[in-house]
Structure formats: C-alpha cells, structure tokens
Amino acid sequence: MRVIVIGRGTVGSAVQKLLGESGHEAVVVSRSSGGLRADISDSKSLKELFERVGPFDAVACAAANVFRRELSQTAREQWAQSIQSKGMGQINVVRAALPHIADGGSFTLVSGVLSIEFMHAGTIGTTINHLVEGFVRGAAVELPRGVRINCVSPTVLTESVAYHAYFAGFTPVPAREVALAYLRAMVTPMTGRILKLHKTDS
Amino acid sequence: MRVIVIGRGTVGSAVQKLLGESGHEAVVVSRSSGGLRADISDSKSLKELFERVGPFDAVACAAANVFRRELSQTAREQWAQSIQSKGMGQINVVRAALPHIADGGSFTLVSGVLSIEFMHAGTIGTTINHLVEGFVRGAAVELPRGVRINCVSPTVLTESVAYHAYFAGFTPVPAREVALAYLRAMVTPMTGRILKLHKTDS
Image (cartoon, rainbow over all chains, first blue to last red; front, side, top):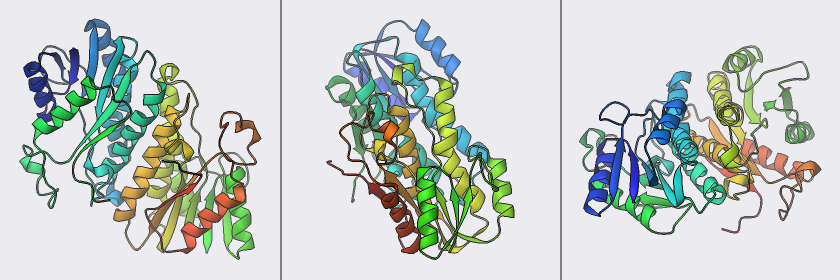
C-alpha cells in the first residue's frame, strides 16, 4: 500500500515506522516540517496536496489539536479552532482525498479516550471526538467504490509524559500499539469501526 | 419553572403546550417570528437574549437545522451551516445562558435518530448529532452550581409527514411524546442523559 500519513507527532511517526517495517510506503504530510506540507484546517491546502501527491491506497490521519479549558471559561475562538482542526479538519481530509483515493482504499481518523471519559476541562475534547466518531459511522455507509473509513481512539500515550498528570488514573498506551490499530484498520475489511486503545468500564 | 423554549417548530410548540398544561411558564424564542427573537447560530443575539429575558430555571432547545446531502456531494458551506446551527448553535445557547440560569437549572438539547441509524445523505446529520450528544455528556460533568444538561433524540415525528418517505421503515413518534421527554429531563435530577425517542436495535 501507499499510505498518506498526516501528522508527524508521536502517533504519526509510529504509524510511519510500522508501515515501513510492514513493507508499505508511508508518505508523511505535516503542517510545519518536511517536504510535503498541508494544514488540515485549510481545505485549499488539502485539495492541493491530494492533487499533487500521486496515487494512494489509504490515508491515516494523526493530526489532532483541541483546547483544554474549563467549560464555563471556553471562548468562541477555542471552540472554532478545535472544530476546524481535529473535527472538520479530518472531515475535510476525507472530502479532499475522496476523488483521488484508490477503489477499496481506506481512511483512518483519530478520536480519543475523552469520548467516553469526561474530565474537568475536557468538554471540548469530548465534543470533538464524538463529532469525529459520528462522521466515521455515518460516512462508512455513504462512501463510494468500496472505500472504507474507521477511527482509532487512543488513551494518553506512554510517550506523552507531559499529559500523564492530566490523565491520572489512566493506563497509558504505547504509540506502537496505536499504530498497530491504524494498520489493522487499513489491511482488514472493517469499516465504520471505532478502535478503542483504552480500557472501557461502561 | 420558567422555561426558555428555543424554536417554534413542531417540537418547540409541543414543549410549550405541555409546559403550560403542567403549570410551568414557557417563554418561546424563535429566529423569525414572535416577540422574542434570537438566532442560535449568532452568539451575540443569544447573549442579548439571556441578558434581557429575566430569571429562568431551564432552557429547552428545539431548533435544529442540518443539510441532507450525499457525502461526496456535500459542500463546505453545508457543513459549516449545519455546525453553526444545530451543533455549535446549541453549545452557544448553553454558553450564553450559563451565567444567567438558576442554580440547579437544566438545559435540554436535541439530537436525533441519525446518531445511530446511518442513512444515504445522512452523514452531516449523524455527525452533528454526535457532536451534540458528546457535548451533553462532557458538559454534564463540568457545569457549575448543580446545573444539569440532557439531550432528547427524536426519530421522525408523526406530524412531519414530508419526512416520512426519507425515514421509510422507521416508526414515527408523536411530538407530544418528545415533549414529555423534555419535561422529564427538566423535572427529574438526571444529567448527562440522551433520551432516545426511537427503537434501538443495536
């Protein structure tokens, strides 16, 4: 497979490494580093990316920014930026890539544990994760040409030590395990699935 | 209770009627008719509304517009307007009303059956409903002063005959049953609940 990996953070890098080890080609796209750049909050930059990147079989989206702020203190701009990035940003990736992706190709988006764990200052995260998961479940039914779509929902990463205090009481997951879920979503026939890389008690 | 009812459509009217029958005061707000007007897609008009409307115990939001369009044909503007209306619009209602609502007051938002039933041309609806339900579940944990928040998820209404063909195979629900769910969300201590006015097979 030739896979467009969007995001050069801990998850994106782990996906890139695993794809390489598994005999696939990873084409890494980032907002701010490397040769191929695109900003998922900017539809035009995504359109240009997929027009010039050549044929591909899968898109793995691992770019995701949301604000963490107490609900009563959240500002309009923080909601708007979170939606534009992790929310509509990922939807825009699918919309821009859809005319170019191979028949039977797959999209893998990212949500996160805040979908089902509700935290102080976490409402924006919970809301955006639900938006992404809702899109994946709805789009799975509508995508043409056998194109599939799934979502990986990681908890806090073992490697993201700076976030461990906020996620006190959560079992961290290594980025490689998250990358394995991306690969599984790409190489099996699943569609409309939310792959949860965290323990669920409910 | 004094309840701000946002929306003068079939659901909003049924909520208004039921509140009156139950000895509560309904203050109806609409975008385009009546004395009290506000547009939930416009944060400024919501801020002005809640500053001038006087004390209230609950907000029932029954205003909800999303586009129905095949995913591969959806335009940026249709996504943006759907998010601004039923999605961020309802979040903006909560944010604008929160400084003014009574201690222990309640918000009741609206999602819909497309959260769990995935339809041709329904992905925008599914996505926005998930956004709303995610916000409700996250916000329930964060709201101060004992303020509660819940969500009513109706299927197609018995009264909305024009939509019955699109929802072929669904059992319609009378608007009065939907209104009862709004009232139940207001008068019981529940918070973070999604009240589903439809059959779930999964």
